[in-house]
Length: 363
Image 1 (tube, rainbow, N blue to C red):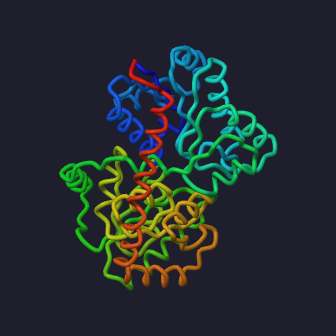
Image 2: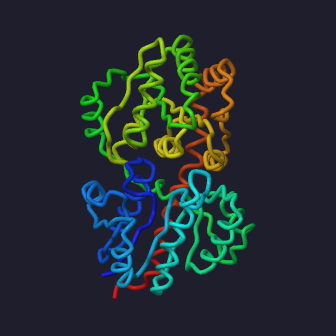
Image 3: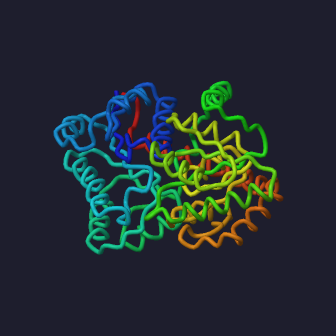
């Protein structure tokens, strides 16, 4: 058996990161029968239950050392692990796991990550010192590749795509069951909404006004689809409460495959969460992104699209006008997405193919 340890933002009930994990597990299991997967998770019991693989606490150094000693590969990523915007502890933690693997002579695959922003000079030096020792690096966007090269990474950096582009969807019957459980009545002209907490959440009032404006000008039904449970449910409810018009909200937690299926039910998606936009693209659903982080712009660039607006600079009347225009030509936007998506799906599968090269034969 070949033992692979997966290190990422796993076990936090964020549909985007759990989708990355689900895609990696699914693709490895379909590629080889002799693979044992162990996930470093903030909630090992939940991860075991949802993904059906072995999981250990991401903060247990004794557990990590025990399993690293017999490991054949450590995969760090995907996701946005190397950035120092949300916390100064993030980069040292993930690089620390990589360093520990190298101490035990375990090959390391830095997998399809979106890198940055990295503002702290010490963090930049740390990234340079550690990543120049890994065996394979892939990134999900051009900007991440350029940042690593600027920092001084000498290793070949492969531009692939987010592993989620290789994620299979949930079956349609299950999606219908979820809509029934949630009491969702809308059947057509659905504008899906994916929000997230941001700073003091003052943008939520603007979003409520924007959605009210759209509802009054277009024949649409608004459906909130949370990605990070339960915080996204809470912000969705806040916006719904601020609105004059009726909306619907998905309130329970679902697997990444199920959320992917739910996104496939909408006619267009307005998203703040990166993986809501990726899920829309996977479903060939027209999408509009509001940017709170460079990773949103990087992803949209790969589709030759741009963000509608920055999250901290929402001009209500302007945004309403833009969305009305996009809604009227959503079929055209769908064609643009279809042209790009097949290539991204192929690039996502390359992550697995490259890592299998490190693992070697089946002996």
